[in-house]
Length: 124
Image 1 (cartoon, one colour):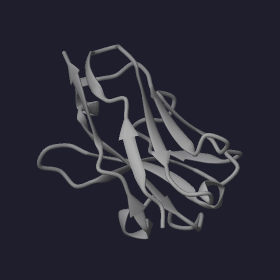
Image 2 (image 1 turned 90 degrees about the vertical axis):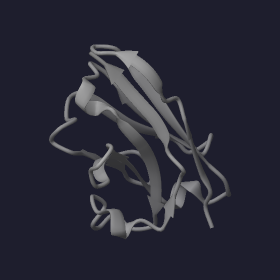
Image 3 (image 1 turned 180 degrees about the horizontal axis):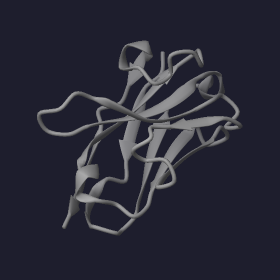
């Protein structure tokens, strides 16, 4: 069982930056692949980024490649999402999620554990 709590969201102007954090409970954090997803009003939840157990491999949605960076600190049981050059279309609730396997990491259904999300609002 893993409990996830996101933080770091807020209101930012276009072009600004935010760093989201996701703190995980439990002593097996390093055995989970971690993902970030987002859901804008009226839209389906979509994949943003994922990182493997050690942090040595990561993958990004095309829409955020070069703009967002996912990282993790297994000693702190925390995964991060650094978001730069934010645009109004990045406005959404951002969720972190955990699963034990690397396969299908870009799909919502593949994840076993979810946080409650943190709101990111980018004003123009």
